[in-house]
Image 1: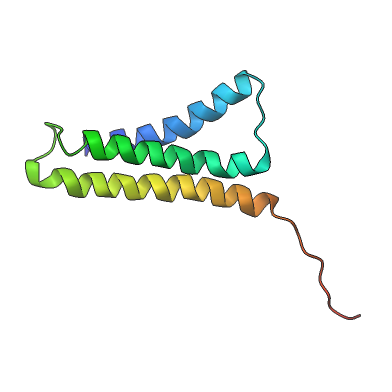
Image 2: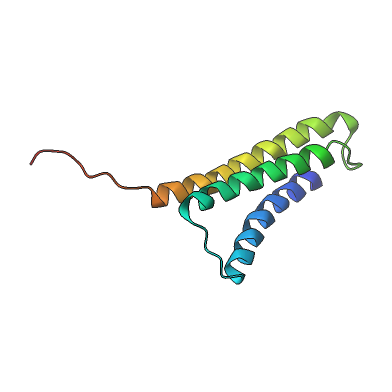
Length: 100
């Protein structure tokens, strides 16, 4: 359970602290970068989880890879949702071609 909670904390801290640091520095990302940043963070988290989770002493040897896979899936789900929601909020709205 500690590994799952720690992995989720890493995901949320990456998103939260990344945004806070950018705001503190006065940097505003343009639209494509705002969509790509969470996905690039998911790539980084994937590498971290696959490298460090299977070899941890907190898990039995047989649980390392399944747990790493679950955390990778959570990273992509959460970061993908952030990127998808940003896209949904800021997508161009097409005008309806309905006849009146």
